[in-house]
Length: 119
Image 1: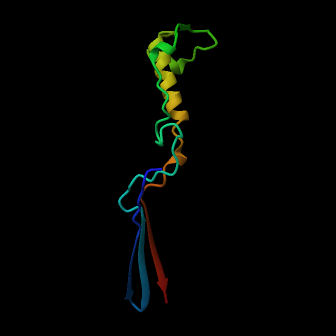
Image 2: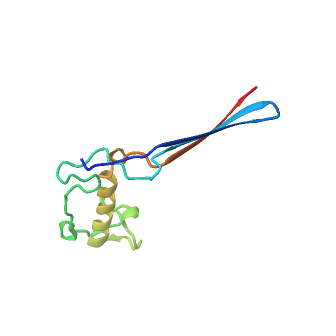
Image 3: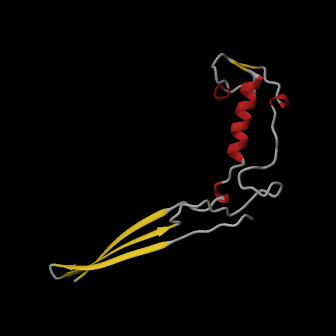
């Protein structure tokens, strides 16, 4: 696992107005918005790269409208035919989506504001 760091902060201010006591608070988690890595792929040790190299030559393409493997979302130029490049590009998108787990990264910066009233 790569090293990581996080800086959290809490700021508060108490004041009175018209006989009422107010307390204003601000909690900030991950102030520097640093990338927190919680898990990695075993083969590469990176959270966003599996190590698999995908080339266009692994795909045949050639799917016509009506074929079982044809899908309109994979036909980028909407001509009714999926070429090798379209097959490759759609596979890359699906592979990246399937192998980019959001749980491999920690939460980004979060800001919470609070106001309390005492009388």
